[in-house]
Length: 205
Length: 205
Picture (cartoon, rainbow over the protein chains, first blue to last red):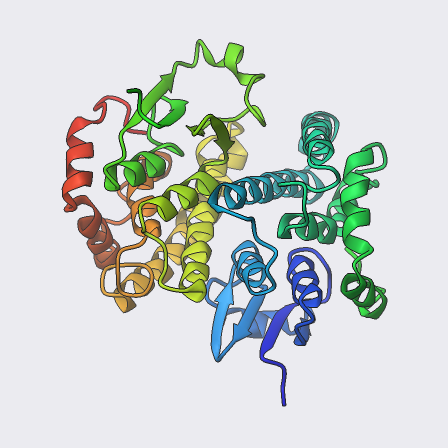
C-alpha cells in the first residue's frame, strides 16, 4: 500500500524539513517527493498559491509549511498541554519564522550596497538579539522552548538549522548553550536519529 | 472588576485589529491599551521580543499577533470543525500574512528606484495573483474562506483590510465580489457591528 502521506518539496531541507522531522518522529511513512528546479515551472501553476511544500493526505492537498507542520504535530501528539501552551509554541514558531525571513532578506539580497547594510542590521544586530532571547527561553524551559517538555517547535527549530546556518554563513547556535540543548534533545530521539541517517546527505541547505 | 484580557498595541488597526475583532465577537470585555509612538521606546525593552501586540490573560503575557489571534479564536469558538479545517484556516492566514508582508515591503520602501520595481512586482503582479486565488476560495466556500462557515480567518482578513488598503493605496477588494462577501458576512455580525461603531475612528491604518 502506498503511504497515506505525500510530501512534495524541493530537494533541500529549508521549509520542508520540519515536516519531514515531524512525520519521522511519529513513525509515519511518507512519500518524500523532491522536485528539481528544472521541473518546477511546469508544476508551479497547478499548486494552490504557486508554492511548495505541499502535503497530500486522504486525497486532499494542503500548502503553507508552518500550517502543515502544526497539523502533523497534532497527529503525532507534539502539541502543548493546553491552549496557552499552544499559544506559546505558536508565538515561538512565528518568531523563528521572523528570524528566518530576516536572514533570507540578507542572504538573497543581490544589491551589494543594500547587502552591506543588511549585514549590519540583520546579521550583526537582529540575529544576536533573537538568539539571546531564544537561548534564555530554552534555558528557562530546561532545553525545550515551551513547558519544559518536547513540542513541535523544538523539532521545527532543529530541522531549520541547516537552512538558517546556510543563510547566516555560520553555526548560529555556536555560542548558545541552551539552544544546543534543544538540538541535542531532538536529535537523540531514535526516530529522528534514523531519519538523519536516512535522508539525502547532499542537499542540506 | 477589571477585564480578564488586556491587549496592548499601538493606536492603529494593523496587527492589533484581528485580536480586537475576535475578542469583540466573543463578547469578551478587554482593556484596549494604545501606546503612543512617543512612549513606545521606554516600553520596548520590557516586551518579550521588542514587539507589539501583547495579550495579557490570567496574569500571563503572550506576544505574536497571529498566535494570539488563534488562541482567542479557540476561546470564542471560531476554529475549524476538525484538524484538517484548522490546517486550511492556518494556511489561509499565513497566505494573508505573506501578502501583508509583501505589501509592507513595497509601502515602507524608502529607496525610490527599489520602490518603483516593487510597485511592478508586488502591487501589479503579486497582489492581483493573491486576490484572484483568495476570491476563488471565498467563492467556493460561499462567502467564507474555509468550510462554508464563519471562522477566525474571515475576521482576520476583514480586520486587516484597513491596514492592507492603506499600504496598497486602494480598496484591494473593489473588484473581488467574493472577498466583499466575506467582509459583509463579518461586519453584519452584531458584536462586530458594535465594535466598529465603538472603536476609535481616527486611527484606521
